[in-house]
Image (cartoon, rainbow, N blue to C red; front, top):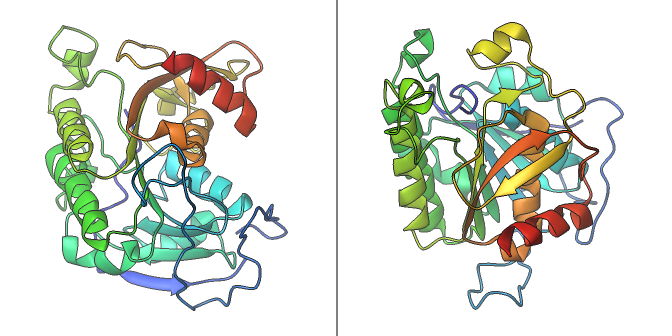
Amino acid sequence: IGDPAEGGGSQRKMKPVTGLARGAGVRRGRRAGAGRVPGRTMAPPHASSSSSSSSNAAVVVPGDTVLVAGATGGVGQILTKKLVERGYVVRALSRSFSKSIELLGTHPNLTHVEADITRPETLVDGVRGCRAVCCTTGTTAFPTLRWLGKNDPDTNTWVGTRNLVDACREGKECGRFVFVSSAGVKRYDAGPPYSILNAFGVLVAKEKAETYLANSGMPYTIVRPGRLTDAPYTSYDLNTLMKGESGERREVNLSLEEELDGETSRAAVAESCVQSLVHAFMENETFSIESVLGEGPETSDEEWASRLRAMRM
C-alpha cells in the first residue's frame, strides 16, 4: 500500500523558501523557472495538447506549478525532488511545515505548504494556480497511532482525496491529477493477501477515491503500485522492518489490468507519476506497476513513453 498519511493535521501555511539540497541543480526545460522571484505567486503557463479537445488537458511542462500532496511520505519525497530537479515549480503539501523543510530542504522553485486534506478550507490557497496535482497521501492499513486525528483510511484516503479533487475542480486550473492508489483495489474480496490488507477498509477507501476521481471530469492518471520497497522507509509494513530493496529490479512491468502482485520501488512509482504528467496520452489512464529484473527506463521520457504506449496496445 502507499505511504503513511501526510495530509492531516494543523492549519495551512504557505511559505516560499530557497535551496532543495545544497548544490542541487535544476535542469531547465522550456519555460523553466529561471528568473522567478521567491514569494511571488505567478500564474502557471498552459501548454496545449493535440491529443485532447479539452483546453485544460495539456501536457504539464517544466515551469508549470505542481502540487505534491503527501510530500513528506516516501514516494512524495522522491517525487518532489524529481520535479524540482526537472525545473517544475513545486508546492510540497504536508501536515508539518517544519518536517517538510527538514526532509526536503529548500530551493527557489520549492514552496512548503502546511495543510490538512481532511479540512477542505485549508486546501484552497495550496491548489490555486497549480497546473497539476500529485496525490501520494495515505495511511497505515492496520490500526496504529497514525490513525489518530482523522487519519484512518476512510477519512484520510477517501474523504481527504475527495476534498483535494474538489478543490482542484473549483480552481479550474488543474490539467492533470495523478493519484497513487494500490494493487488489490479490485481484488480485496477474492481472498488473501488483499482481503487481509483490506481488513480495516484501506483498499475500499482507495477504490472509492479512484472512482470519485475518474468520475470528476478532471483529467487524471491513477497509478497502482504493489508493496513498496527502497528508502525512504516511512510506512509501517514488513518491507520497512526488513528494509526491503529492489536491488537489480530496475525494469518496470506495467498493466492496464489490476493484476500485478510484485513489489514496486518507491523511485519507480515517483518516476511513473512524473511520466504521467509528461505524456498527454496518459490522460484518463489507470495502470498497475511492479519492479522486475532489468535495467529499466530510469528517468528517460522516451523509454517510459515506449513502455507506456506498449501497455496501451
